[in-house]
Length: 308
Image 1: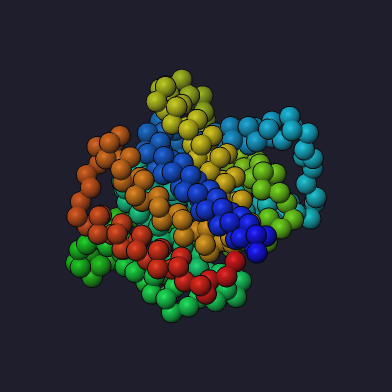
Image 2: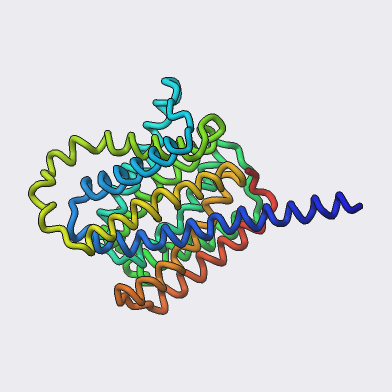
């Protein structure tokens, strides 16, 4: 009886740790929406993504080196890592940073909350994960919340399809990241999270190098302010090295669909940060959208029919 109680206790602790991992990750990701708003004013899009992951990959490889870990990766895994880099790093961040040029950090964070919807749908199609009616209801509620923020609560915008171009860029970014999530679980079964994260970042840097050369860093590096470098370093360390590592551990433990649900905590954190740091207004529409998105997440997360 005592052993059963201990097992139950340990299981509860593990469950709490799994959830807290993604809460911490979401807080760091939220900061990227704020930091990105500063850095995109001082770095071109390709260069910003390049330097973010260059710094992050150097940090990760140094950590693995000093820990005495094997840094080699098999040739058969390289194509998978390249695809993950193209989807989760290059594709997502290019559209994300471009979106920040045209829309607010609150809008981008709220639209990013549609990631669980897309991930769950794609997982049901490609990974054959079952989605219950309760989970589907939660997904619909979240989707309506995203629609509210994209249209700013205006039926005329929906009717005339007059979307903010920045919001559309962010939706494309979310689709790219959802595809990354789907592929991630399979690759994680063969490559440890830290090594995979390091190589995904590295290949992102290599892919972007030609575009960065064209942008000519010498033409703007001298004018980058402390605020610009500070926001870049935040994204490279907290929102890249730490946040992605925690996210990959979560995907390995509880699966892509459940992990992606915690991304919906980002709008709450981002909204508060943007209010205090950027002075962005929190409108009734945005509060309504956030409430609907989070409610949808809670409903979907409590559904027992989303498998790992």
